[in-house]
Image (cartoon, rainbow, N blue to C red):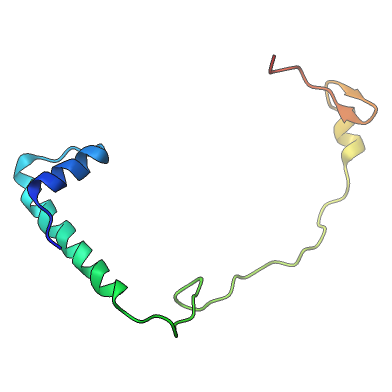
Length: 95
């Protein structure tokens, strides 16, 4: 698929990109090459290809879900500016 200079200018306008007039032909060539590659890829049969989340087929390293800190709620409420019935009181910020 070959893009014309007018189509490249329209795409640039829609994307709000500023393209110098002397670069329009180069952009048209590059974008046409990308569209040709996408057309080739769409023609491939990928029915037997399993989807993957990572190209290297690695697993996420996870840490153990272990409690590492003690409950300090009472301590934090003693230093809070305003507390009522175990709840923090904050100023109203939305009318």
